[in-house]
Image 1: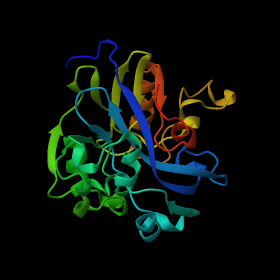
Image 2: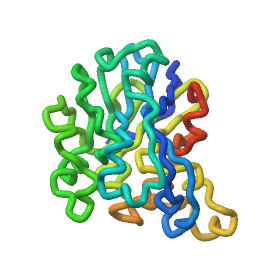
Image 3: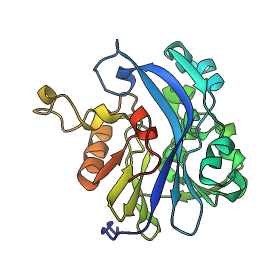
Length: 253
């Protein structure tokens, strides 16, 4: 399998907020801080500079989060924008999107897939297989959200455009994938495991044991840990999908 070799491109990532929630931090930081409420953002990432319109994830609705099983653990949720409203910030509409890269198929990342009627939807084979038979994780998936979409099913690490790869990073789900973007200011990886900054920057006392803190929601804690270590070692900049600091930036890098 080909491995990504860094070559800079004039790519820029635009983080766009779709929803805000308040959650126990332990949902992200495995075995740590379940008693600590923190703000959590749900958003999408528009990648500019390829000549195509590429989006990472689609976001979801606050109402859905509160109604599904996680609602009992959500300390608050509010919609900020629909994808159509969020994309106005970069001057495009959902109909302009050529490709949506799904980091995974949890409902809070997939609910708006069908808004992107002209887009190829990139998903890992392992993720799609798992999403149809999720077992005890069935509360996190809703196949009606993606069934009928124009799927581009990939298997493992794949270069989609020069300097833009999907990386197979399982553990959060069976087929989580992260998005590698080689920019002029370094290698950016959008972490496909639901994470916040604390996952990649453990307290000093923990660094003697763990390089990262595994995702709090996972199908396999060891896989999640290994995937996050891989991301940290490969990236110059790690983008975590749920940390408020991610969405305080107009562009990355």
